[in-house]
Length: 278
Image 1 (spheres, rainbow, N blue to C red):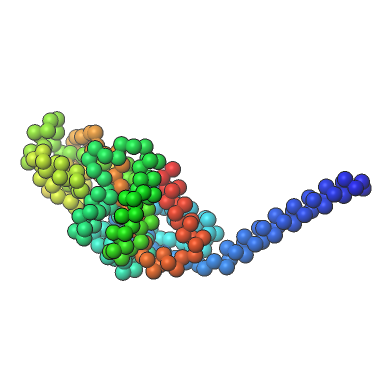
Image 2: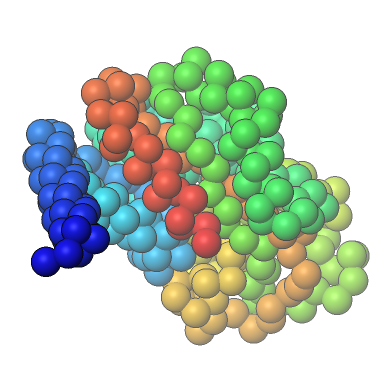
């Protein structure tokens, strides 16, 4: 065997050994991390995109990246606590993590309404809007406000164009809104009230039934609600365009549970949130 071949073989053996040690080290490090199980409370019902797709994507990503050592169970709206009680509920540890809307928290602080968005705002591309919500002075303010109420702000989630109006009555001009009963929240409700509509805010799971009974004339949700939440079978008119391109919600965690997570797990949770927007 020539000297060059001996050197080449030695380098190859060394590379294989280093790779093997790296795998062993990674495996050992993963095995040293604790096994943790969390409850993930959604503010949204079955059939909703966030509950059915985005949250499970986060859960699967976290499980895969931690080799099954960090597992999470999703709960639909109301299974652990009602949406309007999620902020104090997660602060108290009823669930370790959750996703909700500012609209559900306005009874605690009206500033939370701003996190959901303003009519006419949010026209920027999703990447720019996500950066604004997670890495700006606004995100710092939101983090401080949520901390004041006992939870840790983990990030914003994009809920897409809102509101999609699912109506039992035709709306063809502004004056047609007068006297119409609309399920809508946030500053979109303020705008519709200025048009003469009467507004109410009920949980998403109750919208289809309320349309059926006539308790409301118009229900609002994102586009998935028409197909997956039963609105399509009880509505007569689809009213567009929506008021905003990016309705926003917040992902929050119990501070004690978050503090106990290893740094590796925290990084993976944040990665999972980004992946859910791709």
